[in-house]
Image (cartoon, rainbow, N blue to C red; front, side, top):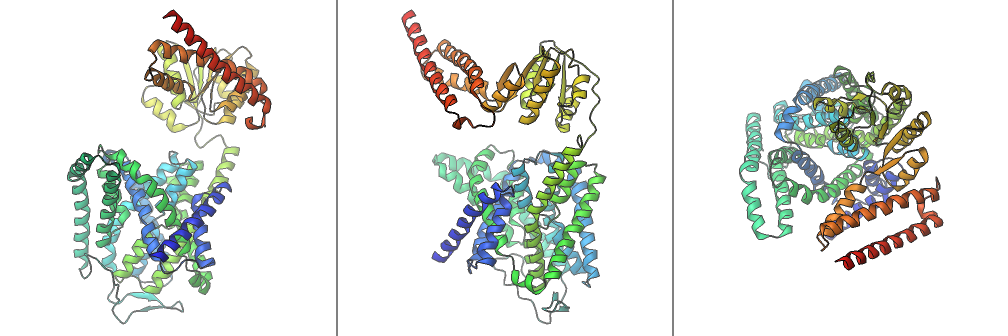
Length: 624
C-alpha cells in the first residue's frame, strides 16, 4: 500500500510539473501528461510494479468521461445525429478496417488476424481527442461535431466488435516470434482472466452474455436509479450523492469487465439512459472533479507504459507501422471529408484529429489475447503502435493549428460568403448570445436591421427561426458597404474576437464620422481600446446582468425596491463617467497594474462612490 501511494505521488508530482509547462508552450495538457509519463517511466524508471494497478485506477477517468458525455446526450439527440453516426462514422469504421486489414494481409497475416488488427486500429482516442477539442474550443465547430460523431460511433461499435472477436479465434493462435516471423502456438493459451462471466463459453455464448449485460444496464438505469436517489435524498447528506454516483460508475465498469466489454462504453450507455433524469446535474457536479484527475493519470500511464525496449529491438518496423496506421486512417478520413462536403479547417480537423489509434484498442488487444485471436508478442507490438500513435496525436493538432492559421490568412472562409442584397437602418455585426438579443429588440420596435456573422451554423440556425442573416466577415468593407453602411444610423458591433471588433469600429468611424457605434466589450481594457477606436456607447458583456444581480442582493438585504433601484442607477452613472475619465489615463501596451496614475485615480473614484451613496442614503432617511 505504501509503495502504491509512493507511485501515485510520483505520477501526480510529474503532472503538476509538466502539464502547466506544456500548456504555457501551447502544446496542450495531453502532451504534458504523456511527456510526464515518459519521463517517470522509461526515462527515469521511477514506475515500479504498481504501475499496472495505477493504470487500472486511472482508466476510470475514461470511464467517467464517457458517462458524463452520455448524460449530455438524450436518446432524441442520438436519433438526430443518425446520419453522421451511421453514415460518417459507419463508413470510417468499415473503410479504415478494410484498409488496415489489407495492409496486414500484405505482411502475411491470415484473414482472421488481419481483420482483428483492422478493427483494433479503426478506433481513435476518445480521451485525447475530446480533451483537446474542449481545450481549443473546437467542439462546436462543424469539424468538431463530425469528429465527435465518429468517436461516438466507434464507442458504440465496441459492442459488436467485442462480440465478433471471439468468432475470429483460431484453434492455435497466430503469434509474432521474437525474430519477427509468424508462427502458431502449439500449446493452449492461458489467459488467467479473473472474475469473468465469459471464460470457457463458445462465441455465441459470449455474444449472448454481452448483450444481456447491456440490456441489464439499460433496465437498471430506467427503473432503479430514481428510487435509489430518492432513498439517498432522505438522508440529506451531500456526500451520499457522491458515493452513489461513484458506486454506479464502478459497478457498471466491473460488470462490463466481467463480460469482456469496455467499461467506458457501458457507462456511456448508462449516461444516455439517465440524460432525462432529474438527477443528471447532480451526477455531473459530483463526478467532474474525479474525471479530470483520473483522466490526467490515464494519459500519464499511457506515456509510462510505452515499451521502449521493444521499440529499440525493432525501431524501423514500429515507426513505419505507426506511420502507416496514421497514413491509412488519414487517407480514409480525408476522402470522407470530401464525400460529406467538409471544407477548409473542418476538413483538416476531421482528418488529423482522428488519425491515431485509441485507448479502446488496449481493451480490444487484451480481449483478443484472452480469446486466442492474437498472440503475446503480436499483442505487445500492437499495443506499442497504439501508444506511439496516441503520443503523436498532440503533434497532429499542432499541425492543424498551423494549417488553420494559414487557411485564415489566405482565405475568406470555408464557405462562400453570402451576397448581401439588403440594407437597413441598423447593422448588427455578430449574432451570438449578445447580438441576437439586441437584434430582436430593435426589430420588435419596428426598425430594419441587417445581420452579418462569420459563423455559418449560427446564421443557418437564425434562418430556421425566421430571422434573416448573411454569412460573411463583418470587417470586410465590401460587405459593410452592401449592407448600407453609408446610410445606416446605428452600427452594433457584437463580434467575439477583440481585435476584429476594434478593427471594425476604427474602419466604420473613418468612413462614417457621424455614425453612432455601439460596441460590445469583453473587459475594461477592451472598453478603452474601443473608445480609442471611435465607439460611442460601449457595453461590457456582463456589466448590466451584474448590476441586476447586485440590485436583487440589496433588496434581500433590507433595502426597498426603490432604494435598490436608486443604488443601481447611481452606480451605473458613476461607473460610466469614471470609465470615460479613466480612458484618458489608460496607456496602450501597459498593464493597468503598472500604471500608478490610473490606480490612484481609480481609488479616489471608488471613495467618491461610497461618499455619494452615503449622502444619498442620508437624504432618503431625512425625507422619511
